[in-house]
Length: 263
Ligand code: URA
Image (tube, rainbow, N blue to C red):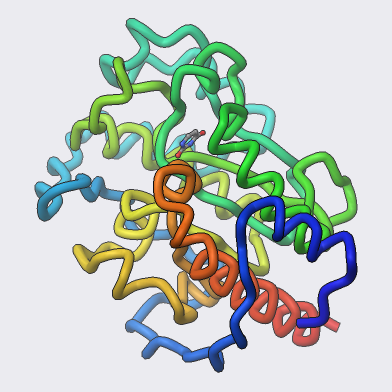
């Protein structure tokens, strides 16, 4: 990828040096249903250990999931705003449902709202979000853009903040999953960037570590999915920023291949 002066300045500001890009490796495609089919249930992958199995869906949960799967954007947003399906509703200040543009070709999936996201009702608006914005800007992408190929749509696996930023619980994951599934179906992105182990493991239904998942292109029901480090981790571990930059470039290549295929 050729970088202009602005991009280089942006990356330098982020502390990223640029070794040669590795060749894109394509992960073996898991047996997945064709593109745009209903995604698998999103289950939680905790930070320190193998994820507990998602609780079996009760009949009333199944009916709710089926109802949400038919919603349009506005109905989905309204449903999330008044959601009381798990205990997180009791302490939340706001539901952080989405950020960016609903026509974007890029989908960024994070973990859960933090303090700032809870206060402002939008994902990635705290310090991690500022780093994410800088990294996206280096690719000429922005959550403020309305041009689909320059815009991003941002969503979290959980829409409400776990108190004190504790780990999400399996029942919270299970009850929130229909929202992300419907967001993904409505958006139909060209590329998905899963940030952090939680988002990656949830979407790919695996316990593999970020180290093993990143650096290659996965297949999410026909859409390329790239795993990278969570920006909050990058703030604590700046040495990993170069790897994150490689992941972004991999995602850019996948998005371009999607654009070529779409024309
Ligand atoms: N971390 C996330 O994963 N999402 C946010 O919205 C904020 C921080």
